[in-house]
Length: 192
Image 1 (tube, rainbow, N blue to C red):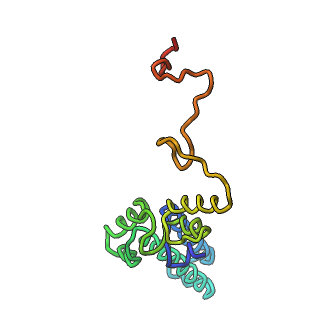
Image 2: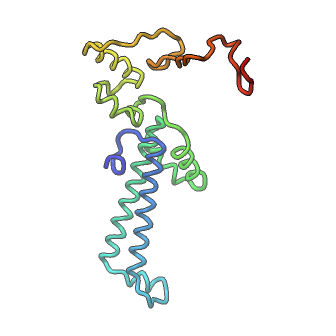
């Protein structure tokens, strides 16, 4: 619920696009509900709108407010992910360039890497909170995991090669293959 209605924290581009899709669905449903309540024999637009019941207008206004709220909340958090104040959502009201700026800034540009003044990067908060390091970078979690394993008495693999990545050793050469690079065939070459 915080994704759609809350103003705290940060969200990435994917969640912003999903929230915008939710807004689109709410607005389309709203228009369809309003159109279904209009009388079929109305000649003018005024007659059509006058034929909608008071409860129809109340539902229309409620769905409109919900859609606007979701849009503002998602955009607010998306600007916070870009390390900007959420009030930047007001850029939408600048004619012509405001909508384009809003779309590019929220929909296509990456957020701030790591934590910023509005919280941890989207996706890091839940992982970091599991280890009690809610404000730390994801790289600190590797050290925390190693400490936890050491406390439990599990042996740590020794890092011997500079080509290791996050505790995984370089690929082991299968038996039967020549170890000398000069003797190995390359792409498109036949072995001697």
